[in-house]
Length: 550
Image 1 (cartoon, rainbow, N blue to C red):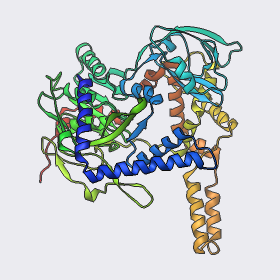
Image 2 (cartoon, helix red, strand yellow):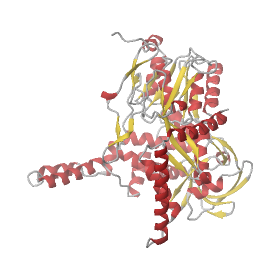
Image 3 (cartoon, rainbow, N blue to C red):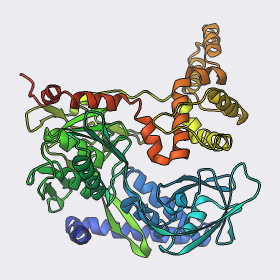
Image 4 (cartoon, helix red, strand yellow):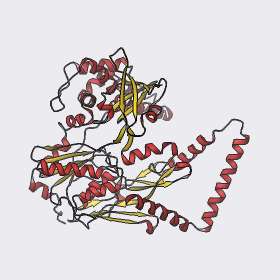
């Protein structure tokens, strides 16, 4: 039914787009396309150096779309398969994330229950051959294309496991891989259910339904926490289906408004709800975006539950896909969405840019007040503000670089050689001496990172020299420069708690996969603790929805 609906929408878009253009606009488009075609033809024929046509035109397309917003993008036919995997969460393959490191292709993360994990592949295994074809000097895209294929077809891999002298040969069979976006769910003390939703694919709703049914029927939970932190969104239809599990039939869930009223859409809960009473908390942070914000915002606007954590990202734009010649697609922004109170949470105005091309954040002075179903004030133009704000610990710049350079990953791959087994995620603690080993490993990698204070200091120096202050304030500047001199040892100790936590999480992921990392991370989680506190206190939970006195 959804596919039929999408086809009808695309057909309608074509009719509307043609009808919206005046004769002059249609003439201007045709004229300028003729000019571009003639110009490019002259360049390719007579320019002194050769111009690769496909690459050049693709770059022009990307530059043109970049001026609009980050979500309008061109997907060439050769990349369409990866795009569909993001939407559906389905493909035929072995079920593993792979990465490239210089000339090596490495298993980064096997998925639990999938052929890669079932065959014993581990994070850090180096892929040498796929069905006899060497991967020497190849990248992860080359390997991915050969690992994917029709389900139930055989594969033979040759791998090199760190710490072993001889390569291993592994036989396995491709399967239809369906990535379950419900990474983990469980019953917490106090009969509170918890589930983490990593993204919204075409199977999100059915997986959430299965988890919720199990928690309600077999775990006897009396409250529910839905965690969409770091969930960047995805398929809106599945988000609406999830909302419908908890919101009565007929209630407004979402409105979409575009350039033409003929494209506007209103979505209401279309089925009988699973449970309209169970208390709900939605956990969010600054990386909760799009469909995650629809979920959290609708729960808040309808006073159906509480939102806990940090303000969300603020993406209120709707994308649709349009077919292009030669198998390509255009994913373009066609509308804005409005949650039940009538507000749009879009935080950045891409239609108004500075002279440098930067889009502007919508200032608080231009936002408007809307009201929830029980009369609580909420605002538009800046994501979804939580009912209970709990700030997550800031991540120092150094930690971003440790992750980006795969320092954690590479260390744990080597660390596993000496530690074949460890405690379960519920009890694990970083063994004594491990952090010192990690520090030595970081130093051995000649680790350098971009410190913001260094950049700011350089900019300050340039400004002082330009404005003539450097002579009179040189001593003070040198003193500040010495105080901010990079010191790797000092930084590794200063950020020891944060680094130790990320190191332990990487260990959990490599030994117990994504579920193990999740179990470990929830052991000390201020946002989760706050949600449990409110859900455990019925009076405090109900107070959230009381309309403030004027």
